[in-house]
Length: 235
Image (cartoon, rainbow, N blue to C red; front, side, top):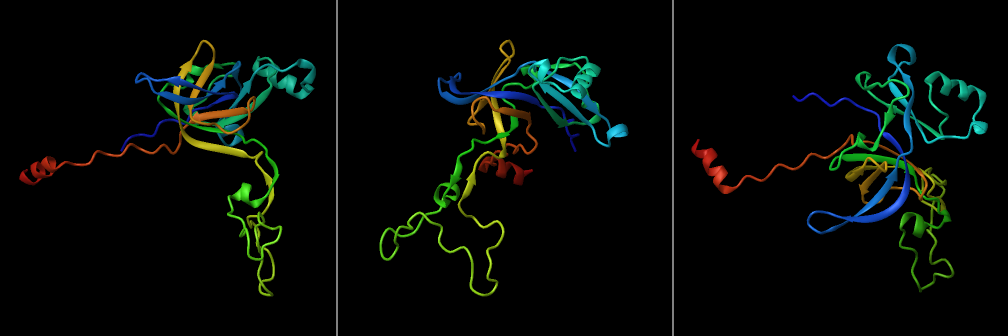
């Protein structure tokens, strides 16, 4: 049985937008561009002191006037400049890093799979057809000015109420979303940029947390041919 890889920290990035790049075969690949900005380790959490192991990472540089006194002391203890964004990543004890350590785009390599977490684009109050992909009511035969409604939501006298979680009209988007198993297409260490295949949740300028994929589906084993089966029987 293979030993599992140690769980290490991810990266804090911002979403610049989408573009495309061409691979060696000349095919264009849609990618999302994620930008790093002075990502450093600000603090550590240990099992003995905090009951769990984690790394606190900081992103960018914040204006000193916008930082509280307590946070100024926190940054001074770590000997790093005040950060715009702080995020904790759970890690194994062997993956802990010293405060002040700088993480670059080379933390990930082209070809590996990652999980990304961000806040999805808010779409305001939406109806059930847009929010839940409902089909809507019939266009004719008795339906009057209710074509895009969700219809009945409850029952009769028993139980006589609307169950919690019922799919209805309401606020759509602006939620924390994690997309699994996205592939890193390219890494630009000089510019501090990651190119992730496909779409990443969130609007341009949104903070995006990137970590190693934890549920990456293993490649399927090749099917045995007839010759292989005959050779196996002969053996």
